[in-house]
Image 1 (spheres, protein in one colour):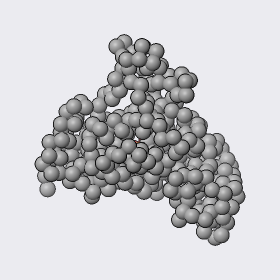
Image 2 (spheres, helix red, strand yellow):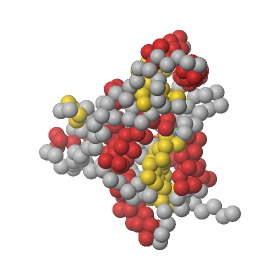
Image 3 (cartoon, protein in one colour):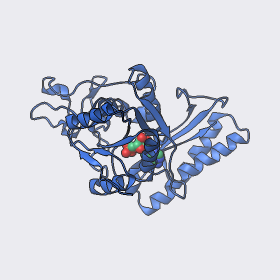
Image 4 (cartoon, helix red, strand yellow):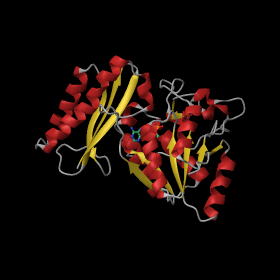
Length: 310
Ligand code: AMP
């Protein structure tokens, strides 16, 4: 079978006209938003997308709007040539890789970061240039608080905003997100519902390395020793799930189990939470489907992972 190369589109208006012409022919579109440096986790999302629509578009864009100045925007890994090879093999129809998605005021490149949160400056503020740069943000009020939202206060408004922009540019019928970023997936579902996007959002299962480590573009920054120690995350989640299935329903005890396992491997815990799968409310006793969520640092690398307990 002949494999045709995906179209590589860098311009917003070209992306929109590409999508509109396909949709006017009656073809359905699926979108898989990514920040690139693709791995098998991304490719599994693409396989899901391809099963749900006639054409699949993958976006590659490292979104400055979701990184605080102290975070790893400048060292986030990228390999566009390698990504394009993988996407060609994966048989996607188009790759949207804009160099910039936000409007900056003349002479202001944001210093790589955008905006202010709760009146506090978190980066080169778009408002300092007289207000002619980007200043519109989507906040999903409750869901973005807690867990990753606590230690990364600008993260989810940046994610929700860039995903809304991608939805408006690509106009897909379906969008696929990984449950690896569970809170993010739930926030996008809520945004789509609340703002009436005509897009079906699908959550796709976490893909792990053979030894259990959840795949992540950031894993490349782990030293071999840190990578070995980082296995304590998935190990701790499995241990806690097993304990819950054997009857331990007290969440404090289950979270302690996770904390202890990761700390023993020199991981620095950011958070351990047990929340309802629907709505992400913290629970004290397991009596409904929950998800056990963890973020921990190994050296300078912050990793997240989770496990559903049904
Ligand atoms: P990223 O490029 O890290 O922003 O991720 C793009 C999409 O891929 C998001 O929807 C992630 O949740 C998803 N993703 C990343 N890693 C995995 C994984 N190991 N398994 C499943 N989905 C993933």
